Length: 76
Image (tube, rainbow, N blue to C red; front, side, top):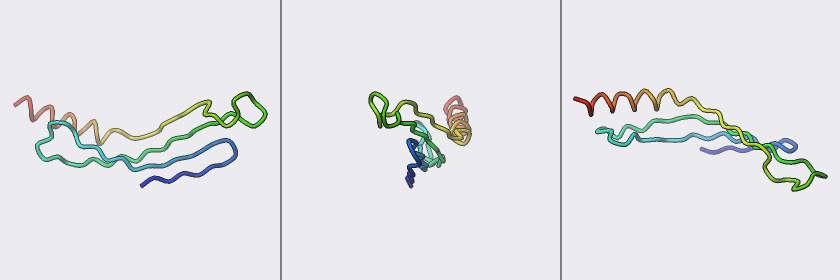
């Protein structure tokens, strides 16, 4: 799922990202919810409309946890 909304010179984008950890014997899909903000240069400025700054927010804890589990499994 990807959702985007534009407010003024800012684009807000939400996305669900599915990862599978390399080496995971169960190939367990890990769902991560993410949010990105694109800040564009305002009208009247040089290169107006181009992205001036980009921020990403997500909770990677479920992915990190599974990576640790897979690493422990491989270490056995």
